[in-house]
Amino acid sequence: MTTVYCTGEFSFDIADVSDENLDAEFRRRKELVSVLKGEWQEGLEEKEAADFSASELVAALNGKGLELNPWAFEVYRMIAEGRTEDAMDAMRSEIPQLAPPSHERALADLLTGRTSAHG
Image (tube, rainbow, N blue to C red; front, side, top):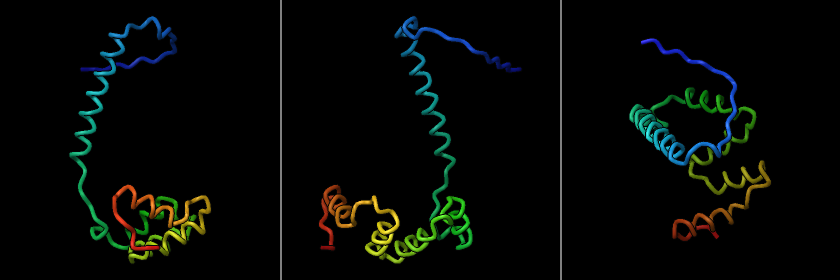
């Protein structure tokens, strides 16, 4: 079967389109997105950092543009070492508009119902 696509400019008054037609098209597209999303998610494979070499991880980070922000590597290392307090302080020194770590901890504690071990 051959499929032919035609494109062109057109205009219409949305008020002239019936609610039934809009609802039907919305449902059709919503179902299609749901099917496509399901197929896409089924194809995903769960990966962990241990599944990659150090050079692959560095290359992925470089691909995200982090070489423009060398402090991000230091922060990433601090997080990996469990030094989240130091990492948060380092991030805040580079991005002053971030809330202080104490505020972020208080918010996280409020959301999780835990009490932070830090002041």
